[in-house]
Length: 444
Ligand SMILES: Cc1cc2nc3c(=O)[nH]c(=O)nc-3n(C[C@H](O)[C@H](O)[C@H](O)COP(=O)(O)OP(=O)(O)OC[C@H]3O[C@@H](n4cnc5c(N)ncnc54)[C@H](O)[C@@H]3O)c2cc1C
Ligand code: SF4
Image (cartoon, rainbow, N blue to C red; front, side, top):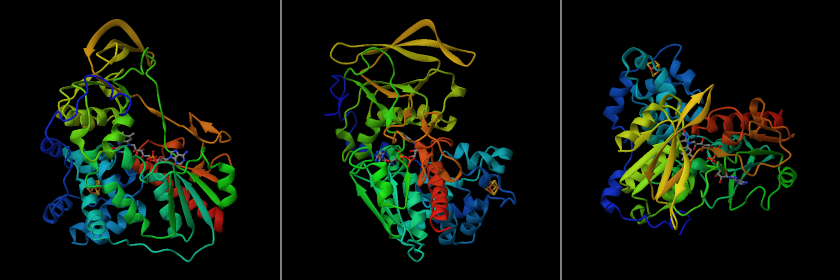
């Protein structure tokens, strides 16, 4: 049993298996062809399309929507995959409300954007569900590249390098590829084992070997990888978790949100997963929202997100906040944890009200106590296990354009690299761009 599941207030099966199945159903079900046609018809096919400018992978959005409108979803998928080989998962998980759909002129004019994410899903699903992989490899270059970490950044980098004719070996410490697509993203965003089927589909390009259970910092060293390969791309994500810094934060019932979510994503039977009756999630990002919503969907009675700043400062988008509220999650703002109560296991959490003075959060002295048999820490992830010789910036691996690190022959991208948002689509863009730079360095 995992830590945190020892707590006495936790129980499995708070809802029936049928209720849990319904709760974890696809958040945005796929369009039927006629729905896609109607949605595509709303696009103005803007010349200087602001939606494309807002997309971190620069997908030609009006072009792919036009291709859907004219009955060519396969061509639309190709337009998407040319820029973003993980366009399938991005269609499901991208916070479109703060990216392309926020920029859409129909959002600006009418408050109702073209549903770009769902159209992207329609196009990519058409090709992927047919098992068609629309790319082939260039003649072999004889060069070999090590990619460390099989998350979105590593997979995107590997695919582009393989396409360009290089041999790629991905070293992944977990037993499965996919990174947070497989172990982090909320279950209702990637239903039906989509993350693994996307990995299988991507590997059809050939030239990529994935070695799971192999960790840099374990038996693998950066020097060893450099000796065995012509270039190294680091895409190890953020494996560490920030501490709450309150006494007894390791007591039963207190757990890292990312560990709970990873367990949930790998669970074969969600109704066997224990959850508290009163759950408190500390944090304000996507991880906090996902932990809270999924606790509620498992049957927790009272779920509260406690965030130390005001609503406007919350990293989770307004859409995510509303999603949480619509599932019955309570959002508390301007509160921070100051104490945990419990002898054998957590029973309550003390929160102190906060104010922001000169940008800094300080306590007001006024407190409130919430009953809690489960508390999830979701206050940010940190870089863990990067080779010590690498220069860092703001706690992440420092990179220049194209993802070059301070060490010759070593590139980095995705969450572990400095700059950029910690989003799936950004990781894909950085992996792809690093691959192009590695290619340039290897073949001139
Ligand atoms: C709970 C949660 C929910 C999220 N929801 C969304 C969302 O809805 N939409 C969105 O756009 N973004 C979301 N994100 C962010 C998104 O998942 C990440 O930005 C993205 O996965 C980063 O990709 P990456 O390849 O850089 O890292 P990761 O996906 O973290 O992949 C890193 C890989 O490297 C492996 N690894 C780590 N260390 C080593 C080592 N030493 N040796 C070998 N392998 C190693 C890991 O096991 C992992 O497979 C979410 C994040 C979390 C935590
Ligand atoms: S901004 Fe909106 S209307 Fe204009 S091209 Fe993009 S999706 Fe179409």
